[in-house]
Image (cartoon, rainbow over all chains, first blue to last red; front, side, top):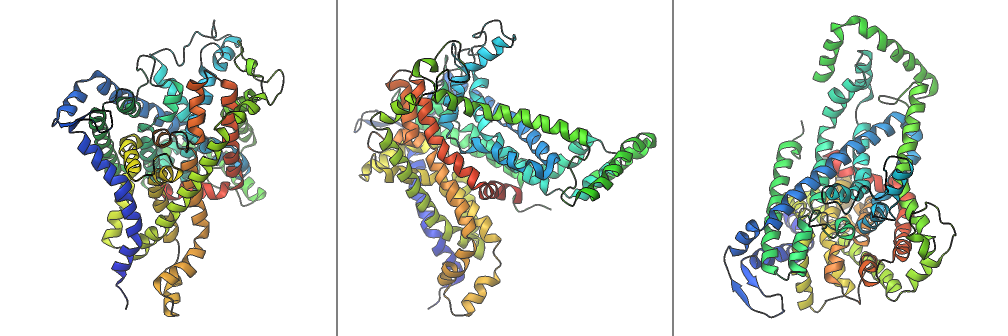
Length: 295
Length: 317
């Protein structure tokens, strides 16, 4: 007996769908359910239904709104710098052509490094007293004192400093994706524009960037989602400090859950965080990407 | 083409300005023909420009490569020199002391074995689930398939911190607390959506006639998938496997939430060096180097496949 194609397709998808239902959808359901309860951190402790109380508490707490803004700021810093540097490198590799191929490979190496290691090695470069960056800038005569800039200890700049490892790790990804996009731009189009006298800036802003738009959109959305979830690099560098100045949403939820032992509040924060991510991603995808609707 | 026309108009306004830049362009055009067919479009032609670009590239590579080199150099310093003020770039004295300290610590070698185990189980699980699912989605184009791939994309947006705790308590109630199996399942929630996405792109490139002729020859649909289609996409499966492996190898948050002592992976051990043993920077850098070098070498060996995987989804858009 032969089952229909549609059934067969369903049969092929079922194991993966079941897996995602059990190990992603169900925990998410638990998360949302927990957000309506006041839960004792002790296993088997009391569990009282409190309605939306956890949500009110989340919005009332300065830690939550602060973490929201910091997460947004962090994401913007990371994605903007990564895009600018990645595009620069992609253009550099493209203008150098085939002979730069080996360097393209070498440029990729940070992508394979664990974020925890990247955070660690940048912490080691920026740390007060024996950090190399401060020392080198001092020896070059730029700083009067190696500790003049407290990269990871000054609350005003720490959010930028903790973003550096993330930028370092994934500029390569941006570069690769944009480079691949650049290879798809027809050479005659560039040729024609050049013959018409277009100089480099006109070429970039009027031909290259508009043609790359779909690629750029995907790269920005993918990286934006990842940056908004950043955890490892920040945890190892500052653990959210000093004075919570680098505490992004993932860190706050983690600390609320583990350190402060308030799973109900943490679940409400997690639910809001997830909803915000979905909303932003949905708007981004539907306005700039439009899968399958390319003309 | 609208853009090109606009540029044409702009150029038309000032014919004098056009004569300047366009003359060298035609010059380099003939140069291109002389030097071969590889060069086209955006590639820079003039020698001076190229030299300048190479200098820029060299500077970028030095800046980009330096952080990891410094980590390597530091790992060869003596433990005291590691935190010397002011720091030096190269070790004054090259020694393997930090490596001996790091690897001699209890739990470190075990954590390596855990990392390898977890990554392998998670990679296999991802492939076993993603390959048929992606095939079902791309080959039959049903409504359920389209819904499923969108749902898989949405799971990519779920912050791990949001599902980590409920997942950990689920695993505990299944009797899997603190085991590599539990952690590999958690890692598969990250790599599965990515694997489905990647494999779908690879299956799309396979001509449909291939398995149609196989089914005409008496193969069942499952047989056609197994004997005809899978061998054709084996390169794609390798790419997907690399990504699934790396996702698990480098993952930290789930490992932190779901493992205690028995199944701890190396990233957690590296992070613990900071608190448990004071600030042992020397051992930390040595362990970080040992953990990173295998995957960096893997990249250099398999770079073509990795580039293919990274750019596939995005460029097809």
